[in-house]
Length: 532
Image 1 (cartoon, helix red, strand yellow):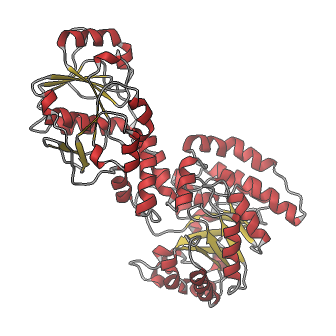
Image 2 (cartoon, one colour; image 1 turned 180 degrees about the horizontal axis):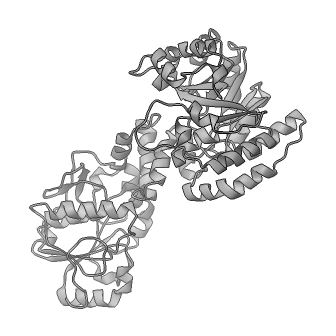
Image 3 (cartoon, helix red, strand yellow; image 1 turned 120 degrees about the vertical axis):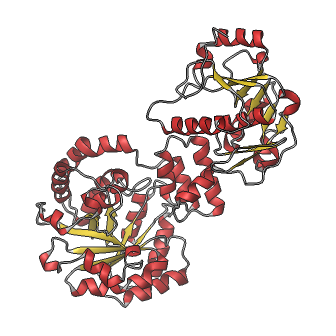
């Protein structure tokens, strides 16, 4: 058995491959003491855009500055995409590996390849072996491939001087039985050493790894605390114990436990890797984990957004990460809005008070209620906001399908009509609103576009406040007051998104004057509710 720790390579997706020197030293001591055989110190890459730390490139110069325990084999990984792209394969390899293995700290090179890159990248194996490197190939996204496809891949691999052929559970949706089946298909053609790299979306990374060992796999990957892209990997602190037991060997776990306490637990608290229900769903539906990691690291995506994107990608396909796909998935409405209700019949020439979800509504409840009694505006509450007396609220506005589905029972118990893009909602959401009076005002989302029509609108984002402002504008209201739009915090990306929305709206030629009447972080004209 060969235990390979790839923390600095896979974990770098969270901290831009920037690991402090002191941590590297302690890490290497811990790996040696806990029975790890190979340390994959990072990627080797030609891509230089943006700042990335040393483990994104793992150059010979960098590695020569590190003292490695004698028992550890030093490895790096390269992406096949850099070998089959614009730069010719041999030229890319010459730039990536300018030195012969005898002159380099690197002994093992692993090539990570998607299936469609595999055949074109295979010649790299002979090139590297001729220069003295040990070579492994990691096949990604093969968990849902057919027996015929896997055997064909194994046949191609068998023609190369590979030391080990890996397969990765890239989306973390594999079960132990599925792992055993795939291994059997590979081994029917490939008779060399095999390895497995597991992800923990379903909480099965360790189980899948151990089942693979039982099925004859001899190379196994892990990372400290499971640190790795998305939910992470099998955890070295657990795998090391299992491997030692199978070897009948004694290991010293104290340095590794110290490493966890001093460095990795604080990093995990900060970056938040590890499985959760979102990663579980992604694993179940074959969605690339970077979609989830990106959304969880962006405060503009709330729970409804994340679930909505997962549901979209479940049907539209999310095996390959694409930022454009992520943005369009968040904006779940199409480009052709439809609706049946015209807000003009209720709002024309009237003042409107929008009640947001911020603490400003409850903090100034009595003043807001007195303001309503004096000014008699049309009072519109976003979603299920209940910060003032219910009989003072005239309408509710909601637009997010997941939020509407979650709040269906609440809306049924609220007396106000609900404004929502009913005709554009999924059937399950419509069903959840069957007991509610719904005024159908259509919505589409298009970047940088605001348009107001009689029964529908277009907004640049899916924020409910944008939908509500569009409704008041389509209804030819006279003025809009806002309460409870406090803001989130100086570094919260949601503030930037909201500010951008307000600026876009106020810059539109058909916009209605906005006035915040409770404290707000946004650059909106503000007057005190106590003075109006």
